[in-house]
Amino acid sequence: MASEQTYIMIKPDGVQRGLVAAILGRFETRGFQIVGMKMLTPTKELASSHYGEHEGKPFFGGLVDFLSSGPVVGVVLQGKGVVAAARMMLGATKPLESAPGTIRGDFAIDMGRNVMHASDSVDSATREIGLWFKKEEVVSWTSCAAGSLL
Ligand code: RTP
Ligand code: MG
Image (cartoon, rainbow, N blue to C red; front, top):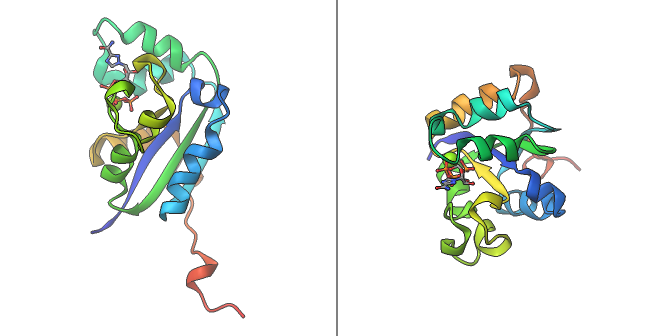
């Protein structure tokens, strides 16, 4: 399985509930690498572009308003099979249908406040990383645990 990158984002509700460390910790302890991270309040333009695939749907306006209502934490994660793995760890869109042990299954009940986003495919990940990060904001690093330091 090749190493991949994906885009995950703690949504405003996740930030406001103090879940940033708990959510990111799951990915770090599993072995995925954080190679990009930023906190910002998205503009409506950025939020609309992020959710562009949903433009025209009845929930689009509310979704964009919510995503741009406060700070989010955007993260580029790297590792083997990370695109599909992050979606599995995230759980179903409707938190009440998410399995316990998933992030939404453990932390959420409302579809409109489902705490985190994760890219749904390799193509979406490429697009979203390019939308949220400049090239130089995505870094490369090697774990000291993998090296031969004294
Ligand atoms: P996300 O993009 O945020 O990771 O969520 P997702 O892939 O699980 O779900 P997606 O279909 O991409 O929908 C994006 C967000 O829009 C809201 N939604 N509302 N009322 C509705 O029918 C409806 N459908 C989707 C959810 O907040 C969902 O996370
Ligand atoms: Mg989606």
